[in-house]
Amino acid sequence: MKQTHKKALLITALLCAVLAGVVLALFPAWGRHREEQKQEAMVLRIQEAGEKEEPSMPPEPAAAPSEAASHSAEQDMEPVASMPVEGETAVQAVHIPEEGTEIGILSIPRIEAELPVTAGVSEEQLKVSEGWVRQTDRIGSEGNAVIAGHRSYTFGKHFNRLEELSEGDEILFTTVEGETMRFVVSETLTAEPDDPVVFALPPDGGAQLTLYTCTPIKIATHRLIVRALLLEE
Image (tube, rainbow, N blue to C red; front, top):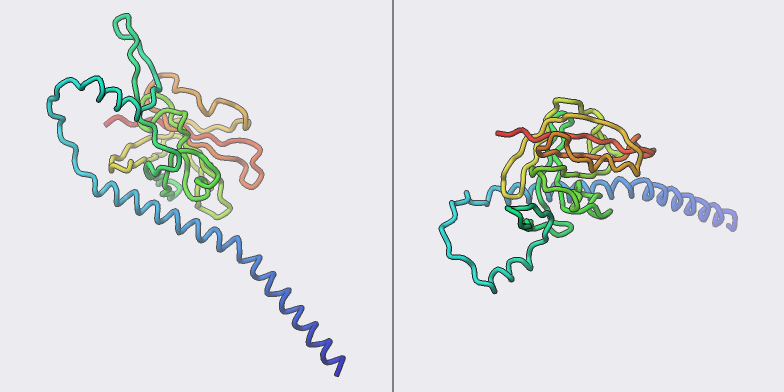
């Protein structure tokens, strides 16, 4: 009787160990599945927001704002650049989206990627979306807009296949307002993790989009950089 009881306990322990192993094996896959669901939902939200946007109408002539109104508007903007105008300094103010704000969809036909983009590069954001570095230029504006992304271990996810891009490939960015910008890859390169080359401005001016991620996949000793230039319509 005692021997039978011991066998039953041993079988129960083995079954528990097997079950625990199965749970541990499935947990990463379940986590990735949840992240993929969140990513798909984010893309859908951004697309729906763009469809709801009404065509902009030409602004009506308005009287000069009062001093109080001007002050209120300035509080909602962050000065990002200054330029001389006839011997004086004029400050350009551009609203910078808060960290985590959904700002658009990045589409890369060559690698069949359709990825949501948010403002900022926090670890939680990059689990679901690619992140626009808020300290760089706005996407589509003159200068260098930088978007960072992870190399997912799941084929085709995030920037997993970014190294397949080459000069001449097309990259599309659609804003939450529904505007689509077309970029063409001009250069790909690999750099050390602390090399500031990722933030370099385009030598001949214009609007540049820079995508970067870790490389090689699963090793991540360097950074893969893809540069693309805006195609003017």
